[in-house]
Length: 401
Image (cartoon, rainbow, N blue to C red; front, side, top):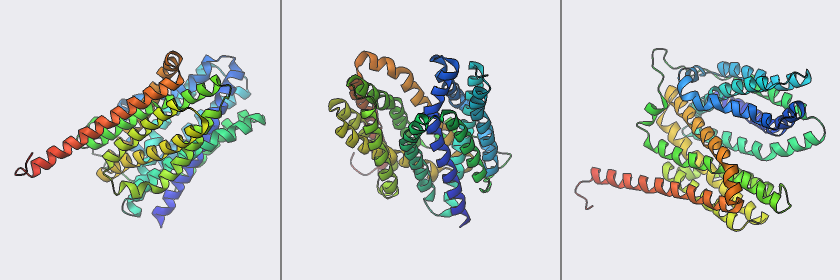
């Protein structure tokens, strides 16, 4: 019963904080633009926040092992809340400068590099104490709540901005992050022996080649994600229907994500996880291709839903690979590595996405991104099947090749 209560506290805190993050993604650029008058400054917080996450394999090797209890997770939440509150507080005092934006972003990035994997590891450990394979269920629902927030959060934020409470949305996220930390205080510690050397991401992957293959497929999907978000936004603008195509795709994707969350455990128990991950992103790539070839809101909504189901199943497959093969320090290390893969892939995609769309066009970019994702996923699938065949032959040397 205690494990269930702790799991619900972690899920509730993370879900509320992530929903508030979607509010900030809408409100923060508007506040910065209003206060500084600089379009370039609108990306300073997000850009600065990505730096500590991308560098975390080096500076956070020991620090991420420290976040092994709800109380320590709450300490990180306090730092994140202060960093979030810096922007609206400086705006209210008419003191907002690029320097403050960069400091806020760096603090947020440091917090995310520790809090994200830390919360996931605590959630997985709580699931282990609850029941067999409950860890992957909890991680999948965590991801499902994140995607629900991704779908409904911007809509709520848009209404709030139209009502004139833009600064209030920034204070809301600071309060939500602080509240998530308080909820986490109920979670017991999962201590790592003080004498053990914190494992590196590379070392943790040596005996877990399937996790590496899963990261390759997911990382490719993160790189090509820009074709979906930026591409659909551009298509809508070019056809004098701004927001319509992206709204159709994101709504479908959100619905598909919820369906995928509900069926994920039943599916991952029947298909080898690494194969499922490869199939999932292969299917997502095919959905991108379909959107590029038949760019109408109904088709985009349906393909978005299919992509949502596939991606959630793929993420659940990688989660089960990690939770079944690791615990304690190595689990936190692997979850940290996964955070780096996702953030690095997404950042790289957004960096190159605009110029690619400008040159090739949104529809062609969707097709190209889909082909790349599907090809990489297919290559991973073929590599896994080859490895299985070699392993099977080694175990049965008398069998014909």
